[in-house]
Image (cartoon, rainbow, N blue to C red; front, side, top):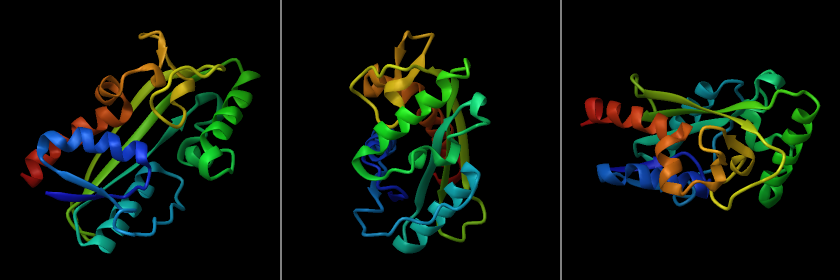
Length: 198
C-alpha cells in the first residue's frame, strides 16, 4: 500500500517510515507530492489531524495518515499544545531552539516542570471516509533547563524521562519509536489498520 503522510517534517517522516515498514506500507510525504500543507486553525489535536488527513487524501488521491502532536504542560494550562511547533512564533531552522527556550523560561518560575507529549493519529482511505481510524497516546516526563542528547527533534532534548534518567533526545531512535507518544499511538493504529483495512 502507498500512503501519503500529511506532513513535511523530516523527523516524523523517518519515524513513520520505520514504524510502517513491517506492514509493507510505503510512506510518501505530502512535500514529495508537492501538496501544500493544510491550514491548522483548530484548538484541538483531533480536529487538526482530521483536517490534515482529509486535505492530503483529497490532494493526492491516496489513503492518508496525519499526525497532530505536541507537548502539553499542566502549569501552562496545557500549552504549548497544538501550537507546539509555533510556540515562540518563529518558523524555519531556528524554531526548535526558540520554542525550547521559551518553554524553559515560562516553566522556570512556576516550579511545576511536568509535561507530556500527546499524539493523535488519523488514517483515512479517502477524503470522505466516514470511518476514520483514530489513535492517541501520551508520553509523560518533565521539562529540564539544559538540553541533552543528539537524537530526536522538537522538544526532545529538554523532555526528561525520570524512569530512564535521560531525555528523549538521548534515546536511540529505535528505542524512542517503541515507547514515545507517536510510537504508542502508531501501535494502536496498526492494530486498527490490520482489522479494518486488511
